[in-house]
Image 1 (tube, one colour):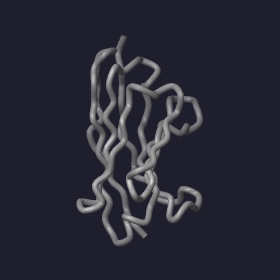
Image 2 (cartoon, rainbow, N blue to C red):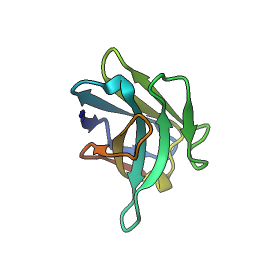
Image 3 (cartoon, rainbow, N blue to C red):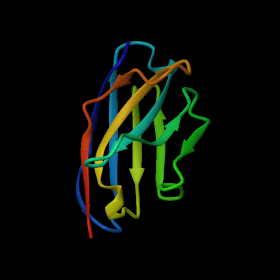
Amino acid sequence: QIQLVESGGGLVQAGGSLRLSCAASGRAFSFYTMGWFRQASGKEREFVTDIAWTGDRTSYADSVKGRFTISRDNAKNTVSLQMNSLKPEDTGVYFCGGSFRGRAYAVWGQGTQVTVSS
């Protein structure tokens, strides 16, 4: 099983950009679908985007389409989230998650805070 550590969160003004990174340790990273989820204060965790283990298939929540881009580097065991045109409603704790061979997400990082000011 892999372990995940996120980095790159912070405070940014609306319209700005941030890049989140998730570093995985352990074997079999390339067999995991990797996703980003977020949780705003007082709300449930929600799906943001994911990328297949091959890197050739991605999906996005409607709220972030055209603004966020997920990518992965299996050689470096990393997955990244480029966030552009950020909005205050993007504020929350962002979690990196791993799904082994299409199973339920069972591996999570500790989360990184993203705050977008208006």
